[in-house]
Image (cartoon, rainbow, N blue to C red; front, top):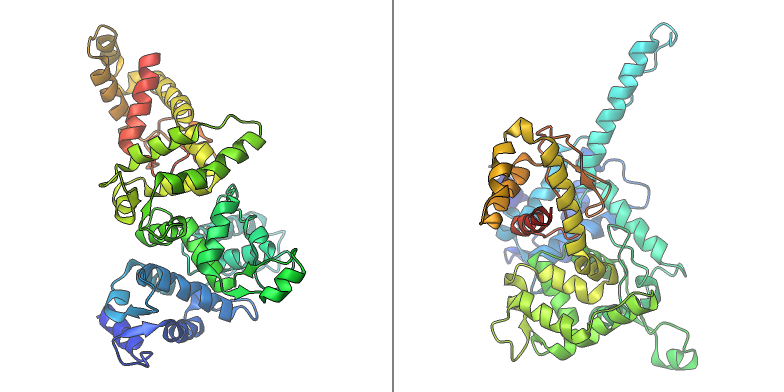
Length: 420
């Protein structure tokens, strides 16, 4: 019933009567939502239009992958993106502060308890809001990022300004080759050629807020098919539908140069090309890596990140060292808690076993099943709490890469375990 109601509501905005909605149709729909949802009642002054752009661009990015300019209403209603937008209806406004007591001295303990409860409730509300792209908090985050990048405050971003894009983790370092390609494929404003010739210091092209939203959506959702579609179009310099060794070389060369400028040893470009092809295993290696190869290989986002982001390549290149260190910490924590789970006998068996990988694999399962708590502010920078195995439902993270599979977790733990 709820889906039917949403579908009927959306059809009211269908000016073309084709069963699909264009970007302007969706903007009208979202603008009306702003007026009706409690979670959006506290938008800052003059921000409503930018909020609408932020919300609609996500709908178009994920549901109009072929860039036709329209989204089918049936597809929209049943999509996860629409479900995320509708989740705002379940979110109330931020909790109101507790009333002030006229006799604060007489109710000091009670007031302190109420304030602590209020702070905890606010924290939970902010956490839920920060995870929803359509929340006011997230929309302001992206918009403020755009304003901070716009150094000349002309309302547009040039190449130099976009190069400073920090990413969600504040650690992104994009290459100039990638940013150049973004502007080649996504130009929305270009200076007259005569002006550019007269003053070479002027940027050749600039992007507006809507195109920046597409860019952010692609960068923050690199493992999603729509983002990989978008990024493949940027990387496909030759417009051949394949990423050839030449293309991979041209993008990674800048990553290697950046590493050398920072005083680090860069791997051979040919070695990286071979590794990328080994990771993707394209159907037709003689032609290169197709978009379908990138979508189905399971490591598409890692491959793309290695070619466009210096920090992402460093995280990938150091993955074995990081995983081994975390696995060693996990083994130490497991050793301290061995009596609790009855693993002493298995350790004795392991000591005299000829099939050490098999037994280490069993120990690894014990680690992962117990979900040792992860401690640290960022993935890849934390450690396993020493001996504190409390059974809480926390995922065990041991790598910089968000897509590292459980099998890879196990493999790294086994390597460290066998080295003990």
